[in-house]
Image (cartoon, rainbow, N blue to C red):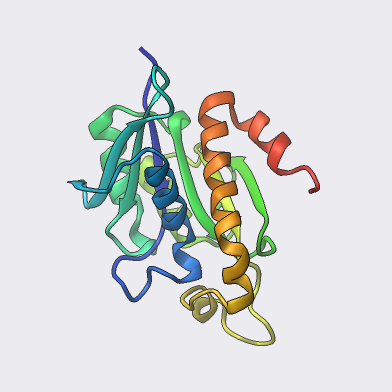
Length: 193
């Protein structure tokens, strides 16, 4: 039997944050659960969890949305990894990325956190940065707006028109990482469209 995969969508808890740019990772997890007819009903390690399969006979997926705030996401992720016996090489973290233009995806494994405190905390709690990341571009704020304020705002009207497609693409990218590996997913989603 193959090792299960832990798929984590970073964000902040509660209705005040659910439609903000910082919560796009959790929006992607909602799409992955919707595709499988699952809901985040189980509560383990301070996270909402839905267990499913990539496809019948395929790898098990543990979909998780931490109930902690973004900057302290590491504890729930590390606890879930321990509970399910999942190594960092079978973890995919989906998160927002300021330094990537809106409506763009970038995938990587390892390396620095790029200033993303949620990713930094996950790496610290796992004891390694060597996990896959699906980075969902939200772009930089206009003018002199503080990035900390920008990420906590809802997507703008123009962005909301494109957002569903971006979420579907990010969910597709997660599934491709699990099914065919990071390189195959990078080749598909990093190519110019």
